[in-house]
Length: 107
Image (cartoon, rainbow, N blue to C red; front, side, top):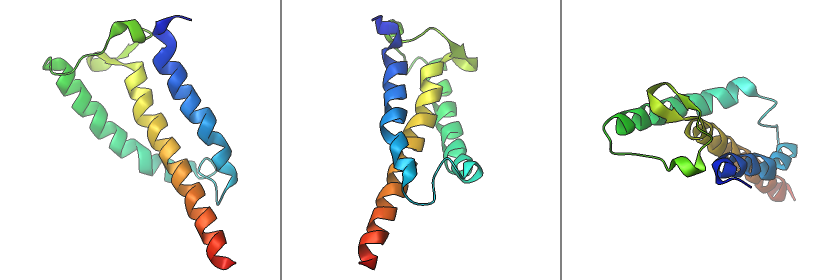
């Protein structure tokens, strides 16, 4: 396996591991607008922050672990996906834990 795909594979595994949590509670993916309102503003702030840090030479990425695809301002696609995948995984986890705790309180 090429090192270039490790970051993308890791992000895919994060989604795959947390996907079954969708079965708990009201569902995260079944509420796309709510999910977008939770994830996109924060992702935009951090992507802007990354773009500034990259332009200033403060922040870099090891190209050996990147697919080589960049969005504007030289931000790697993996970083864009990171700011989407990790919060979605967090929201899935939070939703599942909340649902489980609510069920245990009813007993």
